[in-house]
Amino acid sequence: MMKYIFIIAGMLIAENSGAQVDLTLAQANRLAALPMKCMQQQYPNKLSQLLNDPAELLSPKQLHPAFYGCFDWHSSVHGHWSLVFLLNKFPALQNRDSVIKKLSDNLSKENIAAEVLYLSKKHEKSFERTYGWAWVLKLQQALDESKDDYAKPLAQNLQPLTDLLIQRYIEFLPKLLYPLRIGTHANTAFGLSFAYDYAVHSNNLLLKESIAGNAKRYFAKDVGCPINWEPGGTDFLSPCMEEINLMEKVLPVNEFIAWAKRFSPQLFNKKFDWEVAKVSDREDGHLVHLDGLNFSRAWCFFLLAKKFPAQLGHLKALGEKHFNYSISSITDGNYEGEHWLASFALHAYEVKVP
View 1 (cartoon, rainbow, N blue to C red):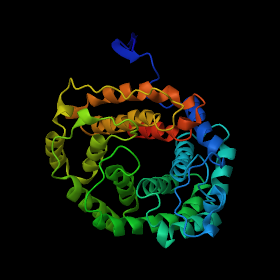
View 2: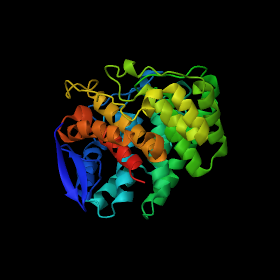
View 3: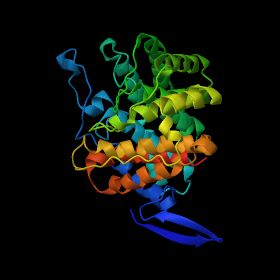
View 4: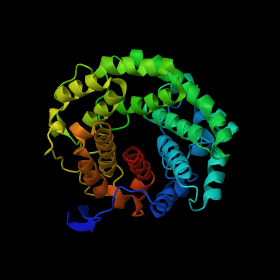
């Protein structure tokens, strides 16, 4: 990618010709338009439903009155998070009243009660485990943290679903004897990362201890993560980097650095580079996952660079390289990517900025 050199305040600054990782109001307005477009759009829709009898064969909106849009349940959830995140960050967000109206319509007390009822079915205990669960907790945290008047009642409405999923985490994690080290929804490390953030935010010691204890059981003995095996053809998460991301949260600093040097020593090489994941067809709903992989790698690199500037500060540039490759693709009109990729880009923004 071509670079340009600018002189600002006497310093030479190199800039990639692509988009930079700096969230402006104009960019926020563009990204907000994507979940706004689909959060109340029922079709196309991919249901992850286990049918117990013919009476359960209903429309997406009947099954999931809160989270029926944006192609699937989890994408709808993180689309809602995207909008709350942007409202929190930009008081002057375009169409603010319309955004709040749609959030309020979807996250009503009655709609969340229906979601709780669905997830309470005995044969749906594994529904969205643990990817969708994690995004619900992230949405809850964003609503909790909001200073806007609209958010408090929505946070109260969502809380019963959050509480149910907290219970599910605590019940499930001890039963999961072996973690899932894959690059898609069921990745265990990702599924625990947002949940751990929520546990810290809400001071839920039982959830925090459950995640930390099980994360160490799953991953503490791991060494030599084979980054040359990545990416898989339809990955949107990096198994190696998501594991590092989680362990950074649950281990004390010195323990984490020692563990990370065993797990992925190449990250500490200041010349370390990693080729971006390239997308051959952004109209293919699975192949476009690789744009998500670039964003998720970016947020892991940004976190490490921010937390450990002396040892891992060089990873910031690598995060920007991955971010810049994929940022333009989420506004190109392809529903296969635009219904969910904005959320991944926004979380990369969130991690990079203090």
